[in-house]
Length: 142
Image (cartoon, rainbow, N blue to C red; front, side, top):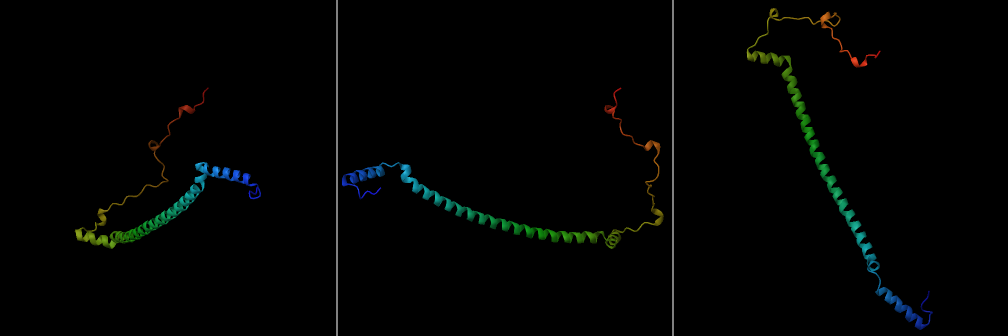
């Protein structure tokens, strides 16, 4: 509707009504655009804060991973050193040396008793047999 083509009295009446409508508009209508702008700024600001927090967490996790990898490498090196030391301590040459330091000598062959191990194929005696307990609950009812 074009207001400029209407007679002057009708134009004044319409302008008066439109001015009154603007004056008595509800607060929700007047603050709607401001609320939308605030929410948009809040969304953008929240996204920015979330992005920075995420990058900070990634950095800290990277530092933790690096520290633990260094600790793992140190433990692996220490484990290798201890394995070498254990192998050296268990070697026959080192054992003989420690025995000589303690003043011990190798026993004579006549002092060593060699016992044969029993074979698996030998039959067992009757008293060595083991039986399972009889299950009375499974017996047939006559």
